[in-house]
Image (cartoon, rainbow, N blue to C red):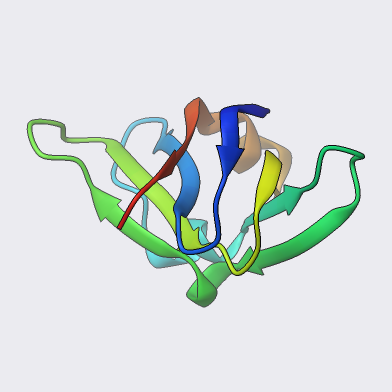
Length: 101
């Protein structure tokens, strides 16, 4: 997904997701990979599992922000979920974000 503008070094980059019928647990987090890319679609960095921060959003029982701190400027962010088909199909991605810390 293209970020609105350019993400900067030190921004928290990630996605708001849910795990279908429940909270995003550690097992589900281990199956998520987030990658950043530059304007020419060159891979900048990726983070997976325990390298990601997961925060449950207040006022929600199932939405979580999954993210990491960017080490370089970026234009695009990508999320991948690897697992059995039933688990992957239950993961919903709502939107990408890049925000100041």
